[in-house]
Image (tube, rainbow, N blue to C red; front, top):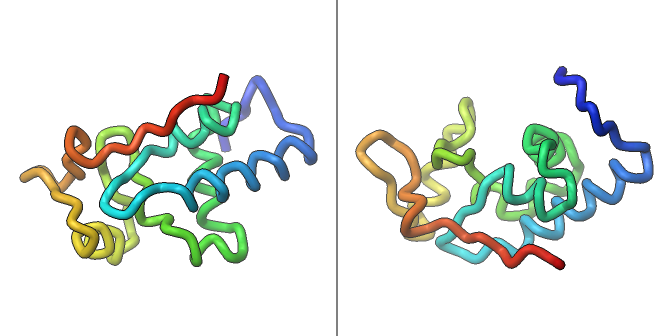
Length: 113
């Protein structure tokens, strides 16, 4: 596991988790965002991997549109065979290389001041 120079306290980790889940809940149908965008919005821009862990291991996260989160290149999660079909069912288009067409579907929420 990566040793983050800016480690979170348990309280910060709880707030981060809540923020991640709240942000994911807001991703519009037919759009995607990245782990990095979510981490930045949550105030921890170097913690994109922790976004993925939060979505994978937090009870109840499966009720959120987690399928709308991809990596910065538009790649879907390895080992999750439903990721692409769920996005395609919402009208998300993929390029020939199998990545989401980020130019068409990227949702970049407004960063708080």
